[in-house]
Length: 257
Image 1 (cartoon, rainbow, N blue to C red):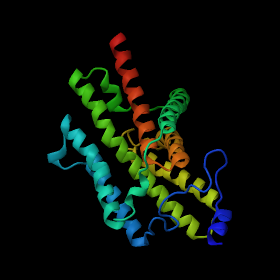
Image 2: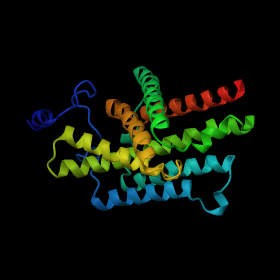
Image 3: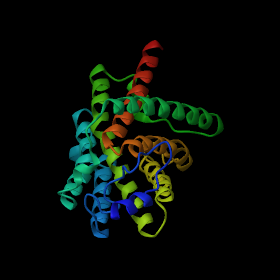
Image 4: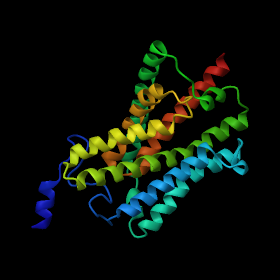
């Protein structure tokens, strides 16, 4: 009887979600997280971002140090998640199915299209700041170009982790206030997009409009594969493929020039 009532209460997003596949933690499955535990996770995210954006002297520089900073972005919040949910942290990770790889490619290409459209509009409507890392890729040495692709793997996994955990925290907050599941998901997505844009402010010279208008929508697109699959590996794969495409196009364009 309880299972039937819970299934009836499950409001899914049409075309994107399967009934009754659901997100972890926000309804106490596989474990419930207290407010204090959620706050600890948010602090860990801030620490990981701090080490990436404003690293101590020992972590400054390029090459392998950049790879280490990218790894710390996911290691710090992941360790915190393991501490607060030792029996439930693996709920973020699912086994990959064949269809999941198709989702990665589809959303990487979709996000590339969205990014190109938004970028075109912004360049023609306002003054923008280029991404220094991507812009420098074409003139970098072969070794540095390889390291750019390598460092993207842990760093983009970290970006997914520091996006999806706040998304789940916001989902927990909104649903606990009696807001419907679908409305809570949409609100959590919107605010996660804003937070993700704020993380990229230093990258784009603290251009608030560019960050919100350019990076916010990108985060929304990359949240969709997680919503569809409930698997962080899928959104991470889409994110990595998307950025690798940008790197490759920039490097190829510089070589042709």
